Length: 225
Image 1 (cartoon, rainbow, N blue to C red):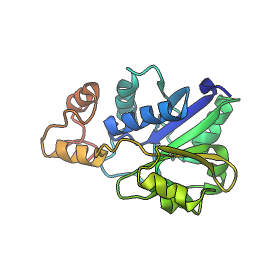
Image 2: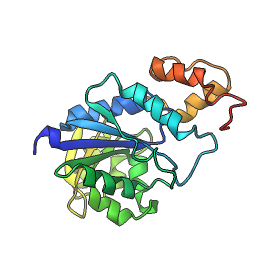
Image 3: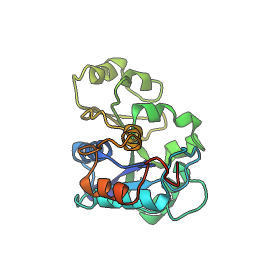
Image 4: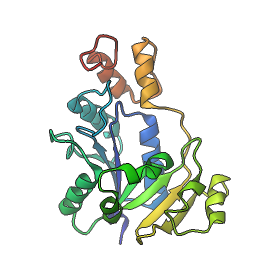
């Protein structure tokens, strides 16, 4: 299977999208040889945050953020729906839309460990391969119950002895464990800075920053707060 048949899936609320999302996606694309990374902003997540911007705004911010990378694409598969967004349903729909393609769902160690609490986790694990990326404060050793790998190999990732390890899940699906550049940027921090009237420059693309300012997103008194 060639690189063009391998598609990374980067999902999330992107509330807002920032350089952390973008840099991780680029490192994964290049590191494991993906043809492209498809960004999927959530439409109506099951656990809706109080300060969640409207889906159409989050989609537009993501569109602006990925526009300069020819290997990044954007999907509105969740944003165009009013119903609750469940990852398992999204992946099933994407597989039907892209027959013959292999998907690699990108997420941090922390999110990977939470999969048992997601909607229909067993089915989700059947639908896609995974790329589990490093997260500050989390150890690759904690995924040992899920991955067919010697604990010493996982430990070598934790000590930065290697950049990436390809293994398999217990169900046979491929899983890549990958150390990525640690950028201490979070959407929560960005929203907090905006509420305080502070600068968010260099935390996200200028086009996204301009959209936030022009639409008065996340500031005190905004409709969605």
